[in-house]
Length: 377
Image 1 (cartoon, rainbow, N blue to C red):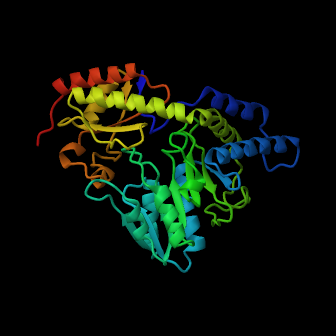
Image 2: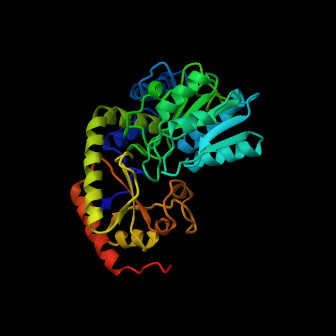
Image 3: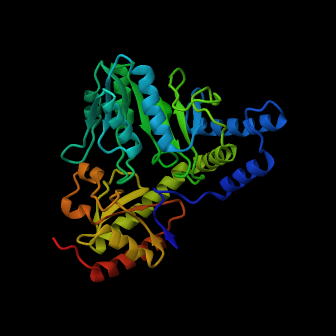
């Protein structure tokens, strides 16, 4: 089995599995309880917070655990606007965001906010200047991802957010770092981000756990109400096994970030060279994250390619990331031609990906290019 869909989800680290099992079997107390079992559970939550803050390079901030990045993105967008958007009604985002950011911004528009959307230029680039110029004195929030989930494109967040904070100190900055954390260098301070969204299952922790980094002094309005856990920002009993597992994954991964990045870069370059030999079109830019490689196999539908590869237990994803066969709006924003949109697949690598995996993929794709039905245009 060759798994090349790590941007969708990752295999849980054995150490993270063991951490979750330990918490479930040995530390099952409620972290809000005042007795010893509760205090031990709270200790595991505190450990995980420290691991995430250390990895982000700002131990003065706070970590709020969520059910995943969708909840985190919604909480960040709505929670910041409720506090900082009482008088300022302009918000800024990009046209290439994940739906868990894009749809909350659509809801803000319905609520009367002026939504400004920054799109890639004719070269498929989102520049720092385009983000900076979109923000004015009436802007309460800008939300932009660090790394695009479909192409691996890296946005100039550090440069843009730093200048926005210089010109408009009261404008809140939110960054969806789901595809960047523990893959690229993610520093809360260098990003100049007030809130950062993270997801466990993208970094070899279980599904169902995410986190928000909140800079010291930044206020959020809660989306959930109840028992007042996590400083009233996310009511509900903390999922201690998932939280502890998330922290353990971060502890294991952080020291090897550069080593893993360099390995992904080698795999990505090897894949590009091999794919070019069989006529596949590389869509991802050279400057993109090496963990994500978007390609097109001209004139063959993405879904056809996906299932053809699956016959040999080679798992990739459709580059469209859409339902019911619709073309990817994000890929169109990146100026991918209509002729290629139907034929895009996304490869995404892990630290376990080897060149032999790429060889098997390319061999199977080569057969497919010769035998699969072509799209009638």
